[in-house]
Length: 187
Length: 376
Image 1 (cartoon, rainbow over the protein chains, first blue to last red):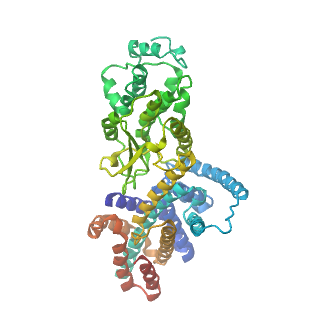
Image 2: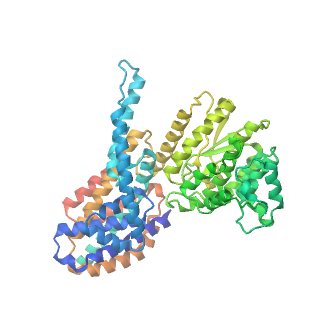
Image 3: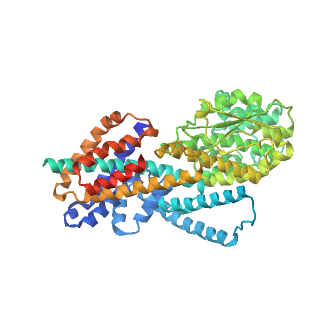
């Protein structure tokens, strides 16, 4: 398991550096906040590109990023060979998500569950726990990019993949920060 | 080649059997599942044969040059579907045989096509947490069992905690009815939920059939953990038998399958999230997952902020050095960590926390100490 993870990290690092170079000389003129946004954006897009197109969250990130100019440039730069296909996939995703959302709204408005009064304790506990689980899945859906449009099973799979990639991202960023501060302190 | 135009939708099995024997190769791809599809037609007494595997039949027919040559446009289309499997390919296979008499037969053929497709489809599955090999070894395993008419259902083959449910039937006498059931086997699963859903609907229909044909409650279900089962292909189409004393309603069966899928995946998540080994139950597990993902995202924000404060003049040099160093040192660091994936994150955090604490101010270290408390 170690090998695929370091491969992932290397891929991520490479793409991240590529994305940062896009900003290039403009870096010096940007404020700290802008720089931070640029760094984070390129990191996110690089992360998504390592899973290019295969997972839902990566497509969602790319779709969101392509909405504004900076993101578009980055996306094109980082994903140049596959950008066409991915853009189509992302736009298709947006349409499908709208459809899914409308269906869900319809469904929710139609069926309202009522708990019987005087139901046994077990049933009550079950319904409570179901509600808790539902609420927490909602939260999870809001956390994972593109998660609102997935069903439970694929949500968990996406979370898995997303967690692995996030961990790799954090790892790489932390190490590069350590190296950077070393260099700075050394100089 | 016989006039194949009339074969499409023709129920004359005998004619086809003859055409099978007589037709020389016509340059079409080997269609092992077609070849084996005719076995039950010709000899109804050996349904297990073609269940055995497409690979088995492949080896069988590889010697003879294209024994089965059908130039039906319908069948040639499905050949294409086999070779270039898309998700729709799974579903289209069955309707391509409208003319075949028993629904059983279409399902049988469909099952073969699916096993073949699945091998190719599964190659595209995300590699990082799928270690199952979709090789013909699984089919080899099946061949051994086809004599016993055992059914196997794999539910979401996973790297850890893989489970296999084998429904072992005693050798029941063959009926034409039982044939349909005996021939069902595992279908490797792609990762697309779309085809899974559509196939689930189909499966429910078949489940009802089965429920009608046999008493679902007779079957004994065994759960086994086999090293062999790890190499089993994943299923897109899971055949589930109702356990003794449980409802055979198709809805509850589907519900049960869904619940099991969810719990399998939650178990995988448990291993990733640190400190969740003792937790059972969806609600608490979800809570931990949410906290962990949130903390990871916050760390990303924080780190990018920190990186932004690095002096930009040095940035280009730093970039180069970083990429070189990190790429080179990655191998060494990974070795130093020397951890199993389950316990990975603990030492990662603590190790880095020490560097943080030495080189940074208190405000920053408090952030990480709080996360370290969470991480335990």
